[in-house]
Image (spheres, rainbow, N blue to C red):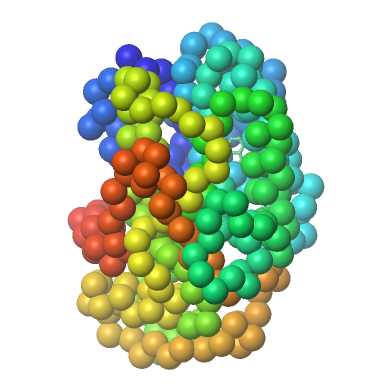
Length: 292
Ligand SMILES: NC(=O)c1ccc[n+]([C@@H]2O[C@H](COP(=O)([O-])OP(=O)(O)OC[C@H]3O[C@@H](n4cnc5c(N)ncnc54)[C@H](OP(=O)(O)O)[C@@H]3O)[C@@H](O)[C@H]2O)c1
């Protein structure tokens, strides 16, 4: 059995890993969240990891309130940067491998082709800066670490864009949604599968654990406007959605206008197959409807 610690277990990605864990009979996964293991407390992490002899840590814990981070830089830095360093130090001390999750917001969004892992980072928001700092501190600790950048994460768990658009589309006749920001939606359950597949193949020796940065999103490209139209079509919501420009919807934190990620590296190194975002959206909405 491979012993895995998943931090931030109550979040979207943590819940997504929990929802598919039974398909991996060789993996024994322990889920914690801030109440049971605060990743800001290095002594607690060290004690817990040492006692339980985990072989992998998957960090799903994060400060994810992108706009609020603009006025809470210290707290965001503590959780997204210093705490990631804590996990990396403990992982190194205990001969454990770390899989950390980061974001497309490490880029400024001025590119015209999908970002590869080596592209220059230039975060424009506090959230993006703190997540980038976390990546850098993890690698500086010399822990064995896979850092996966993802984008536009949604799922049937917690609050996210898909659930908000279902709610607003049901309540209102008309919505204006930004069309000049382009990226790729990512179903958290697909990312969860990619993470557990990597652990399964590297713990069995079938693949080598290769530290480094990797990009993962679903396949394809969309604007928030396209994404919303598809959410409403699949859910069967009748709402008039009109495209608006970013300047018509100002937010405290600037968003990258282009954040499509190139996923060739993760597909090649770990033989991961990735579904198209529209197919994944259908599966997520099926699951949301089943719960209602
Ligand atoms: N959501 C997106 O669109 C998106 C896009 C790109 C990348 N990402 C990245 O993907 C990862 C997963 O995101 P997500 O959407 O699953 O996040 P999420 O739903 O916000 O979950 C994060 C979890 O971390 C917990 N947490 C916060 N501080 C903690 C601490 N000190 N110790 C332990 N747990 C703590 C939170 O607990 P509380 O709720 O109690 O605070 C929450 O359960 C994150 O690294 C995020 O930065 C997300």
